[in-house]
Length: 270
Ligand SMILES: [Mn+2]
Image 1 (spheres, rainbow, N blue to C red):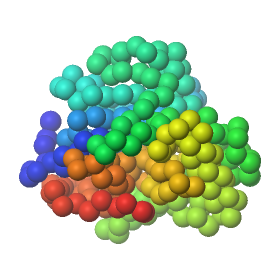
Image 2 (cartoon, rainbow, N blue to C red):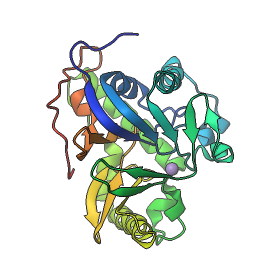
Image 3 (cartoon, rainbow, N blue to C red):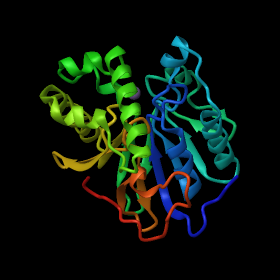
Image 4 (cartoon, rainbow, N blue to C red):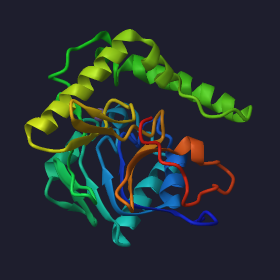
């Protein structure tokens, strides 16, 4: 296994979700680069790690996807505490809550306590689909249109990489541009924050809507770790207990040695 030269980023906790292994849009190479570049005490997988919906349609399982799975298993064997909270695309794993998959613990929800004692409710987020006002966007989300958009985005991504241009997410751009999408996103964020407040938590960590975010919503900390289809982001808690969003496409240089050091800026309000 090739290791990046230089220091690895050292974190207390790393949250990732919406990896969608088994789906063509999964950016497994970026994720592998990230996993090899970061050392963390706890790794929390916040759902949609596997895309069983996509795998049911067509069996797609390239070597890089197998390598992600192998790396996660190895991390848990080698002492990283790995928690897996399944999502809606890997809902079948919810039957195994309370059990171990290798050394990986599977839970329906998780409570994370930050270094400074804040209690965060960790769940995938599809729980809020029923409570948010449905816009046109949600009906398309995860459906045919979304798949086609990801295919176009992959092509744009490929071309830009060949031209040496920085990473750019078409889907992210569309979500910012389509007004209904923003309404849906805000409703989702409010529903998640409301649930956390209602249950007496200081904040919530989720994924699901493929939109990284870290902000206070009605007095509650709302953290969304993003995804590895479009944004390639992780929510991290560094060893001083500070939370931030890492955007790996900005740090990683695929095919070269990543320039990783301890002073990679955390991006607290992306
Ligand atoms: Mn989901």
